[in-house]
Image (cartoon, rainbow, N blue to C red; front, side):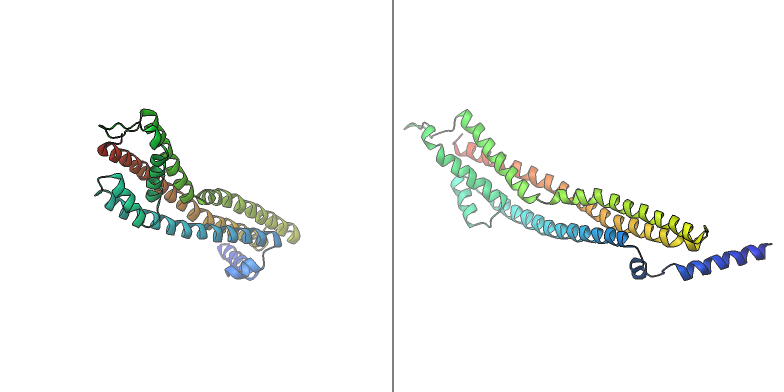
Length: 246
């Protein structure tokens, strides 16, 4: 009896081996048109996400490197004029943009400073609050520019599994069609559709996992960059206080 069962299992496995494509390229080539479209869409999303990841990685490296170099020099400045000269000879960065915005604000508000012959002109309370808002708006602009396209990674990470699920459902439907066509529920009839379904699921996970991981990493780095830029604005205000402008 056991010999009959073993022979039956060997017969089924040999049938599956002959009916089911073994290589990945053959499996894709023999899939139906809709499944190929699903795999093609996943491939496009994968290229899109990896392109964004590479571009954002370069942008973060450039922004963080320039910010670190600028802050190292900024710590040695004692006046706003020195900070302005530092900004003029430094490479473009968010910190340089914040200083230029502050200088423009101070130049535009000079008539309202109310200087006296025996005292250095100082900003009023409302002008200091306005300066805070100006610096915050510049920091928000820099954050939005650096964080551009990062939400696309979250979109790819959340949509890709659904697309893969769609391909999985199509594969299961194909498996049942194989059963109906062959009039049998053996592995040879079910395996091709199940293989296609698992291929769509694996492809979706291969697209979604790196995109979701990269989104979390870039979001954390963007928050740190935003906090550092906000702290730089506070240091700039403190510089004005030490200089006697506030």
